[in-house]
Length: 597
Image 1 (cartoon, one colour):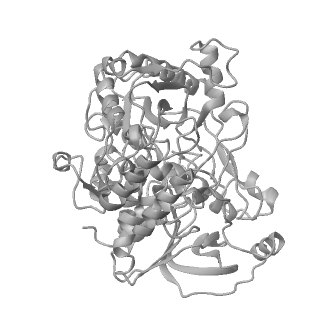
Image 2 (tube, rainbow, N blue to C red; image 1 turned 30 degrees about the vertical axis):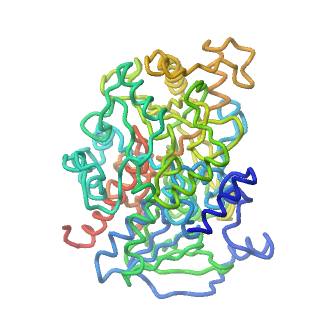
Image 3 (cartoon, helix red, strand yellow; image 1 turned 90 degrees about the vertical axis):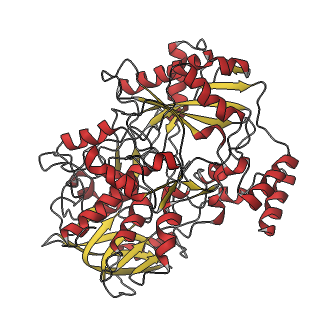
C-alpha cells in the first residue's frame, strides 16, 4: 500500500495523470512473430492440444458470463470452463474516480473498437465503442451506475412474444443478485440483501453533487428510488460498489468462488475464434480458442454459452457459420444457420453541448491536495477518489414525444469536465449535462470483415437514421439550459458557457441549427450497446434466440448477454445484464432437469 501511495504521488508531482500507463498502446490478444503466421494458424485446422471435455463452456467473462459460470457451478456434478480474451482485473480498477482512464480506447483493458465513420454522428470520425477486455468485462471499466430501467420495458418484451420476461417475472432476478447497502431500500420488494453484488451510494459527495440533486428537485423532479415503483425523477445513484471500491462482476461473483469450486476453470488471455457446430445435426459441441500462440479446442458435453456482449457475440457467431448468408457466403464461411445475427444493433446515443462553468464551486485541486486525497483513499477508502464527482447523479424526464406520462424517454447524467485533458473524476471546474435517448429508433449492424477473428468487425451504429432520436436530444439540450433556473444553481454561481462548440460557430448559440450541428459533431455512445442477437418468438424474422436464449435451429447453443435485448431498456445496461444472466442460468438448470431453489 505504501508503494501504491508513493507511485501515485510521484505521478502527481511530475504532473502526469495517475495510472497514465492505462493509456499506453493497446496490446494484441496474443503475441505472434508475424501477422501472416497468426492468420495462417487461424485458417488451418491444426489443433495443438485437446483438453478433456467439460459440461458447459462459457465464452466471455463479463457480467453475463461470470454470473452464468457462478450459478451453473452451484450444481456440484457440472463443470464449467470460462474463457476470457483479456487478462486479470488490475488492482487500480477499484478506484472509482479513476474509471475515466480505463474508458479510453487505448487502455490495456479495452478492446479498442471504433465504429464506421459518418458525417451524421461523432464528428465524422467514427465513435469510440469502449468495451472491457478483462475479467469482469465492462463492469470493470464502466461508471458503476446501478439502474435497472423502466418496468414497462420488460412488459413490452413480453408483449412482443418473449414469454416470462415481463417485469413481475424478472424482478426476482434483480433482487437475487443484490446486496443493497441501504437498509431502507433493502427491505422493500424492489431490492435485496445477501446477494453477490454490492450496491450502495459512494461515501463522498462534493458540494456540486449535493447541489445537482437539490436543484433538479426545485425544478420539479422528484427525489426517489429510480429502481422502485416509479423511475421519473432524480437520484444520487446507487453504484456497483462497496466501501469506496468498485465491485465488478469479477470481484462480486467470481472472486468469492474461484478458488473454492473445483468444478470451475477460468482461463484468461484465451480468445475464442469459433464455436464448433456439427453441420449435419446443427449441434454445438465445443469451441476453438487461441492462447499463447496456439490453436486449441475444448469440448462441451451439454452446452456452449456465448456471453461476449453486443459486439463480440455476433462476431463469434458469424465466424462460426451462424449469421446472415449475405455476410458469410462472400467470405467463404459455410452457412450453418441463416439468422439475422448482428442486425438490430443499437445504443443509447447521447450528446454533450450544455456546459456549466463553476464560478464558486470548482473542484480542481492542486498537486498537494491530490496527493493528500490519494493518501486518504489508500488508508481509509474515503475522500474525493472514492466517488465520481457529479457523475453520481442520474435523472429521468418525459418529453412531449412520449404519450405515456410516466414512461420516460430521456435520461440525464452529468460529466465532470476540465479543459486541460483527462483527469480523475474528482477534479473538475465545469459540469457538462449529458442528455441520453432512452428508446432510440435508429438501428445499425455488426458484420465480420473476414475469417480472421483478430480483425475487428465492421460496426455501424447508424445513429440518427431516424429523426426521432435527434428530436429527443434537441429537447434534452434545451432542458439542460432550463435547469439553470434552479435557485440553488443560481446561488452557487453556475453560469452557462455560451462559447460556441468548435465547428458550430457559424450558427447562433442556442438556435436549432446550432444544436443540430452540436449533436452531429459531439454525439457519442453511452456504452449501452444492445440488440445484435435479438430475442424474439419464432414468428419474428429478425430474432436470433428464443425466450430461453437458445439460438434458433442450433442445438446446445445459447447467448446470454445484452445482445439479446429486443430493444435496449430505459436505463443503464449493467444491472439488466446481471438479471438476464441470473434468469438465463435458471433456464439452463430447468432445461437440464435441475430443481430450482
